[in-house]
Amino acid sequence: MNNTTNEQIREAEEQAKIMMGFAQALSKAASSDDEHLKLLTLDENLKLWVEIEASLKSAKNLLPQEIKDNLFKLSKFVERMTLSKGVSMAKSDFDCLANINMQISEGLLAVVKNSLAKEEAFSLLKCAVDLSSARENNNSEELITALDNNLQLWVYIKTLAKAKNTQLPEETKSNLIKLADYVSSKTLEIGRDINNVNDKIIDSMINTNLQISEGLITCQNVA
Image (cartoon, rainbow, N blue to C red; front, side, top):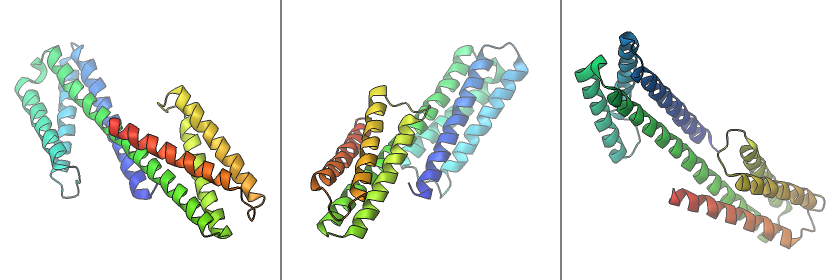
């Protein structure tokens, strides 16, 4: 992934954590009899939404207009409820504010997930095209580069699949790890005799990339 994509993903993850943290703080304040804690929590949450509203007005904000409009409405809702009710809020009001933060947090995490899926799908597709092109050109140097790039991508995918915080189903993780190991072993096999490449192995590697790429795009569209 390029640096811009990585930076955007890290930023979205960080914002999601912040929103979730404020949601938890609001839920805690909702069950507390400490008015100072309630006031402090509401004030901090309001400041957060004021910052969000300010960022929506920035020329650097590239969110679709519909999303910006919805976030702006939510910001105004949070502002009105906080300023009109303050510490006299009912528990249900605190829960409402907490739920808004949780929903935004979940939305940000979904964006991260979709961004990763889209980036990985494109990378898999590009590696498949590069492998096919190098073989058609009968160019050993191109093929070595294509194989190396493809192997690096699958090492990255395997690392993601084995990560403790991954939310992939166990079966999916297992399949991705097996595929990564398959790609690794076949890449080494080809490398031992680059001038006499088995076309069936190259076809298999290309088809593997195409199938996983298609699966990622399909899952993204369904989500």
